[in-house]
Image (cartoon, rainbow, N blue to C red; front, side, top):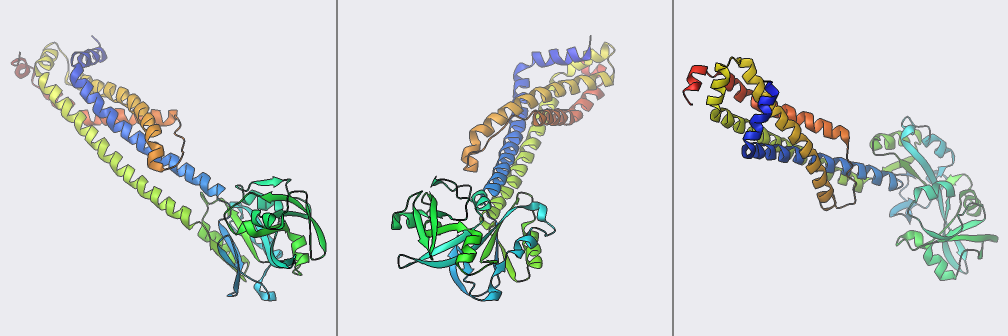
Length: 385
């Protein structure tokens, strides 16, 4: 008779106890899979958020004259020659040691111009990079590309009754309203965006920049190192990371990850303890059976192998079911725990890993009961018949 057949038949005879043992393994592995899947998905979602959030570094000239505001950040007015950045600073930023982590650089010039007897806030931008930076922007009209194109904030457009296709004359130059932004609920609603070089010429600030927004791949980038590199490359600038909110969220996820690891470890230890106690109980109940095996000529190693085979089967089945239950539980619980829409994929590699871990836990937890069973004296064991 094959030893594995003996082990399988033994499991079939003790269905209730083995079902309890299997349940413990499924709960342990399912908890590990659920925790791991949710934390991994949350980190991935955070990475996507980081990439979609736009600029995460603001580069401004070192100046205490704070008279303009953009995106919630005070910008020096730049009335003096030494209080503004220049176009050459864009090249310097693009050549820092961590340049591979920079997605793109979006320079800007701010200034006031008179229109219909009132001040108008102009923002000169590089439209292709600006539109990549502000992925959430929605607008009516055509994409602004030409040097005489304007992109109006919703408040400005409403105030002056302008729609896409209309014209505006600013400082004696005629412009076409290419598009009107949908309401943003920010300062952008009251701004007029135009081509960077046009704005520099119109404001009399050729080659000058008020500030530069930098979008970096900060899922893996050393953002503090990037800001340091920028300040070294552009001595007259101050680089400020704008990722505090996302960073705070990362800290929350890190704490949740550590908590999940601790919970998973405790659950696995409890599962291993359940397996060990159940197998010890099984060995005690099967003393007479083991005595018969020994009397039939089975060696200690055969008894040891039978017990471990039973544990291995429980581990394999428990690992498979634990993976399935864990993924389903993660899909169900993730939206509530993460407070965001995240995707929980089926990952065969994780499934195989879980099965291997469950099998190892089952065998290790059954090692001691197996040794005790192998040590049974056949004569003494037969007395239990």
